[in-house]
Image (cartoon, rainbow, N blue to C red; front, top):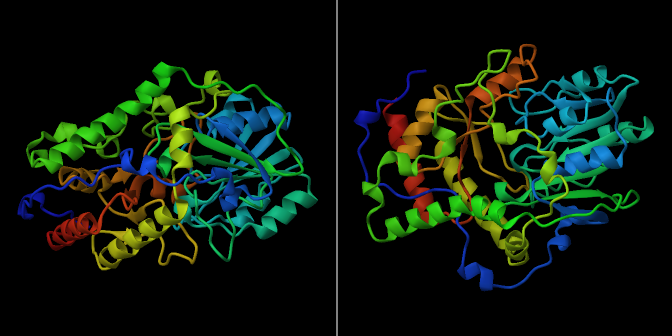
Length: 398
């Protein structure tokens, strides 16, 4: 497919449709109990500094040892499998199709007597149907971990998320305007061994607050009419930049160094500012707004020649992280969207250096073609319409 001629697109006034900023007015709102979220029902909840830390804690809690096998989906970020690599587990990929659905037949064929853990990912708020797999794991004395990092608040009626596995992990910054924080939940009959949890150092939290300062500056620039005059390097999102120059031994662009596991943060909890923002978050309003934004933008995207939605429908109770679309020439398309102030991201573009995806073309296709369009709850109707208009013009230029 040919990509649009970007010079042929009318150069509208640029609008800031970037990542979420900390909602200062919202922090004075009604307090809510995070543990009242449905995904914490009848489960023990532990806060972590990052979502991946929960996996390191589980390796210790379940006494997993070098040589034990863990089956993970081939479509992965890389950061979620590195804790298992760190603890010496043998990580085995199983197939995921080009719609990010688990190939259960392939998964079960890869189970051996050494398999101790099966790891499943609920992508972008859409659930995997793991009821039968959950029962299979119980009968065969294997642990089941649900990766809900992309599915916070998602509560699809047909297939529950985060409640069928022995444990589940979450990552708050992927959904909410917080600098850090994740959660580990474990089933009620297997409470986590008591481990000392420390608050992250002040300098660490301050570093993680820097992106929010930048977002605040961009929002102010938009309000006073200067945003359209800012240089591209100031508004470009990390997800639009050219892939990493370092290559894995298999020849793929390597994921960022910060994605690899750091045992020094394993026993850190979420920062005080993240906990405060969580207490001020009304999940119902966040869910309602994001679903509304999703449907409004989807109406335009599904008619586009340039984009192909990853999913054809959003189930009742589903909470979309973004609007995931497949696109050829992803880097160029993403750059154009970023030029117009739209924080599209080349999702999971990097690869873990220890693995080769040669036998998993479906997962490689997703890692090389999937683009995430923002629909978060801070995007107003006007900004969603602006994004839709830019997509229409890009499509017309194809």
